[in-house]
Structure formats: structure tokens, C-alpha cells
Length: 159
Image 1 (cartoon, one colour):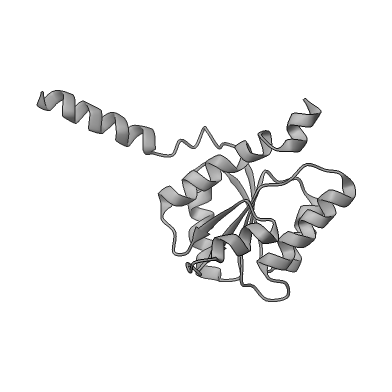
Image 2 (spheres, rainbow, N blue to C red):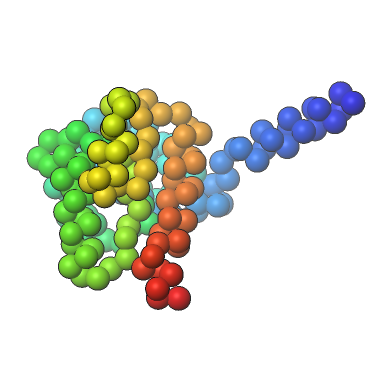
């Protein structure tokens, strides 16, 4: 009986561990103004197998999305120049104007108050991670990001 419990625990632990192969080559734009937060998030993302570009503010994030193809954007809500909310709205407006598919955008914010998730969704973000986040939280969000794109209404219409 004890062997079965230990095996079950091992299987659950192994299934929860990130597999770099699963996200190998996923291209992520990290929009974050804090250098320490950038370093931590980039290290985590690279450990998942992601390719990461960094934008220091919302203005740089909007510009990067216009120039380069990304699979996912992680965006801090409170940055200089243009905050994450305004940057997300600008990205969504550009997508609509060009008729391109919706890029998954996940908010990164220190705010964890009631209504913050609603504010993120209202700005056009797809998900929300509260800082400081754990390795497993970032893994779950990043892993689901490209799936959101695959399941987007634009993809379903094109299929």
C-alpha cells in the first residue's frame, strides 16, 4: 500500500514539473520595467524552453508586437511611458485594424485586490498573475497562452 502511495505522489510531482520541450521555441514578449523582475521572469521562461524578448515599458511592448511575431505577451500593468492597460488596448486596436488574430496577453501585477482581474480583462488581457508569482504559476499561464491562441475565435473561423 505504501508503495502505491509513493508511486502516486511521484507521478503527480513529475506531471506538474515543467517540460522545456513542451514550450521549446515559444516566443514570449516580457514587458516589465523592473530589472530584478525582468531577470527572474526571463530565467523562469528560459527554463521552460521559451525564447524571450524584453520591453522596458508599454510603448516598447506595442512597438515590439508590431515588428515581431510573438506567441504570448506577459505585461506589467504599471510601467512608465505607457502602462500595461493602455499598451494592451493599443495592441487590441491594431489587431482589429489589421484583421489579425488575437495575441494572448497575460497581466503581471503587484495588485491583488478585488476587481483587478476585471480591470485587466476589460483592457483586453486574457489572464492575470499576481506578483510575486511562483514558478508553477508562471508555468501554468505560459503553457496555456499559446492554447488560447489556438482556441481563439479567429482561429476557429479560419479552420
